[in-house]
Length: 404
Ligand code: PMP
Ligand code: GLU
Picture 1 (cartoon, rainbow, N blue to C red):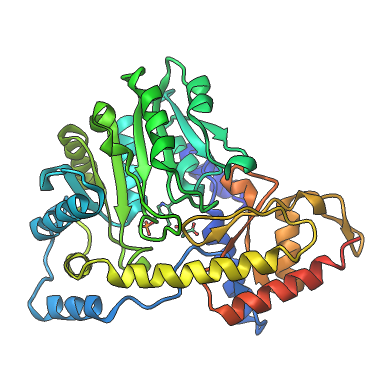
Picture 2: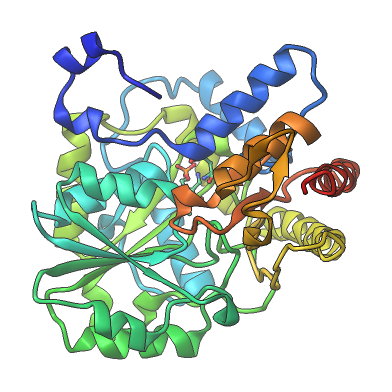
């Protein structure tokens, strides 16, 4: 988005220097094109294409009927925090008391709360790259300095303990990553996170935000939480939410678990910005957890099948460098083989040019890698039906064949 001179005169430096979320911007473009009558396949947005399970919807209706229409406690209903505490024990073998849990309006807010509570102006925040679009901008809002470190394709884009140690300075305050990762789908194994924790043990000022929102969408086996490592546990903020696993993006419920001090700080932050999240959505979220994770695992099985389908089709597209994503619902191929090629006099200089070409020629919306810190890549979401995925890959292959 380009601000006009008039807007620049009135808006703060803070908002003027903030980048618009590229995932949301691309989804908007796809919707606009579809509204003009084009048959657009939207693989840009990271959103489950499943409906929220019925038992969760029923709990929300019941909450309205029972009168849960008032302000909620800022860190969440005690019932929901209790269920989240039980979930941590059941799934992650983590002992978080309800007082260590803060429920927010989406995991995005949980991350913003934690960053704003931990980062002082000038603090360095190491971000494992490729990273989810909002990390860097949230750090900038807190006046921190983002320090992205790039995982290598040969290591499924995962940053190693050695790379981390090289990047730590006396100004490092925080490390942030997601596992399973958006945008790569990489899943950190227990040994890899243990090695990372061994490095962090040596730097007691460094905290961690472990974003585990794709926990249930894991095709490689066991999810591991870095908070399981006792020596650094109090410095870890574990973030999770309902958007992905339970297909509840629109309900806006996420949460974090942390030391009592950090949790209390996030509670205070939230009390001045949004207060407690929606009463009805919280009742639905509590019901979701009471129902276990069977529906989440069923959806994950569908994503695994689609992952295999897309990967197979993508491997048939010349010039796309792929790897096996072990979780989430994204694949992030290196498409740089197309840089420098032309279509009707226009040269593809970047992943941004290529994704705009794919949108205009194939009518498939994808997100270019620049916003994820990887300008040689494009992100495809495979949270779409088999038919759409097959058709999208067919169209993309045809369009790319036009490039000279
Ligand atoms: N973290 C990651 C890695 C994500 O992909 C998302 C996607 N929306 C979020 C956090 C935020 O999720 P929400 O705010 O919907 O809970
Ligand atoms: N997290 C999703 C994505 O990466 C949803 C959009 C957003 O919140 O940025 O596409």
